[in-house]
Amino acid sequence: QVQLVESGGGLVQPGGSLRLSCAASGLTFSTYAMSWYRQAPGKERELVAKKRSVAVSTYYADSVKGRFSLSRDNAKNTIYLQMNSLKPEDTAVYYCNAAHSTYGTDYWGKGTLVTVSS
Image (cartoon, rainbow, N blue to C red; front, side, top):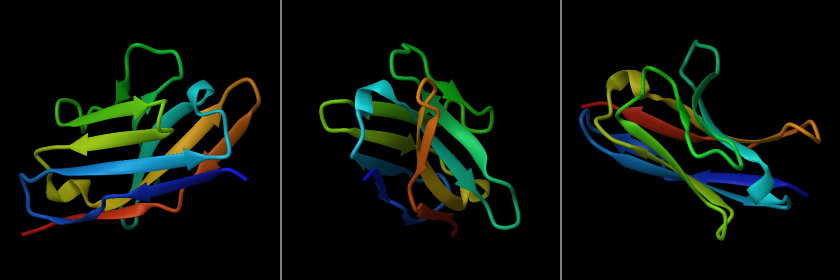
């Protein structure tokens, strides 16, 4: 059974930092593209950052470029999202996603809430 478990969310002041983690189990982690999505209240879920299994580069949404950094540790089956210079508009539930283009499989975590507020 595939599980994606996010952690690291919480309340932070504007300008602060948080690091989210997503631990995966039950899949061949190194073969999956791993992504972070977020969904703010009243808005659609949006892609924040994505790193394919063999890619050197990482995709970032324009709204987070230069502030967020996605990294993956294939030895630990874990991805991270380092979020710096946080803004109130970054407030959302952040979800981890694992997708395999060949198998057509797609898995989601339950999400972790990030609140940026003074």
